[in-house]
Image (cartoon, rainbow, N blue to C red; front, side):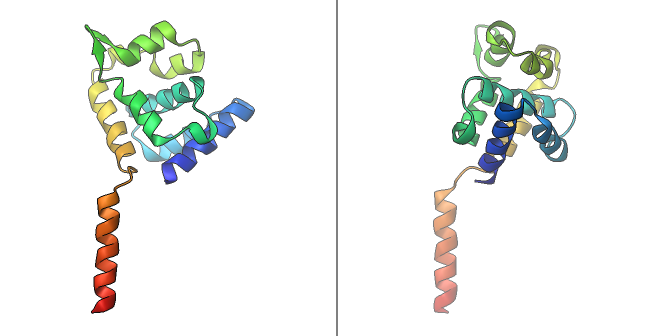
Length: 139
């Protein structure tokens, strides 16, 4: 999956040089700069901070982190709770500290989730594609 390859590249840059330049450039080219970008960047950085780096950094883990923004315990958003109560990385805070003030937070989450879901492996679609190719070769 191409997104996993990008995540690995971002992870290597983050771990080896403490830089997120490639992540920032990718996000700038890929997602809207309306708060959606901050959610994506912040969640990628959370993934790296919790130890999911290198080949461990993948779309499935990232989407789980992003979806935590939809989950609540009582009236507390889990992503916001993590950022403000558990997180110790200032760069994560830089991107996510004000998510509770973002009036379009749910919309931004949905855009990131929709983007990441485009890269999901679809076995049925692959079988249908293979079937179509085989039928065309017979005809």
